[in-house]
Image (tube, rainbow, N blue to C red; front, top):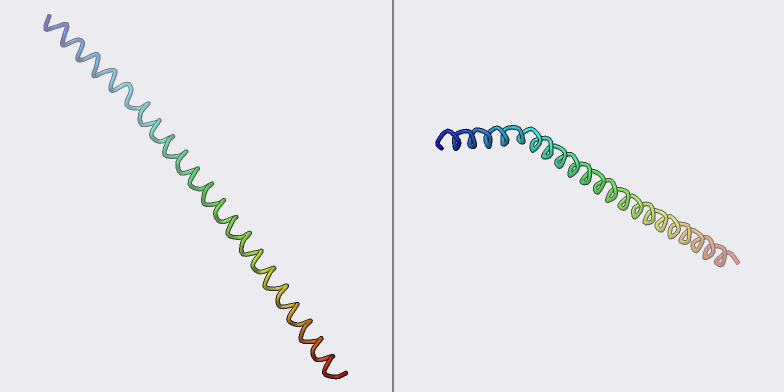
Length: 80
């Protein structure tokens, strides 16, 4: 009976050892997937920020053009 328990324990240990590389591989894969998701999320955030910056720049340019037109219009009215 003790031999049987010894064999069972040895078998369990061997199974654990056999599973370790797979667990390590799974952990590495999960870490890579998590890193990939973070990169994608960061890229999406950067893209969103760039889009907002582009809209803001466009708005500022429009306002600048409108001010120039108003200034020219006022100067023209003063001349007349």
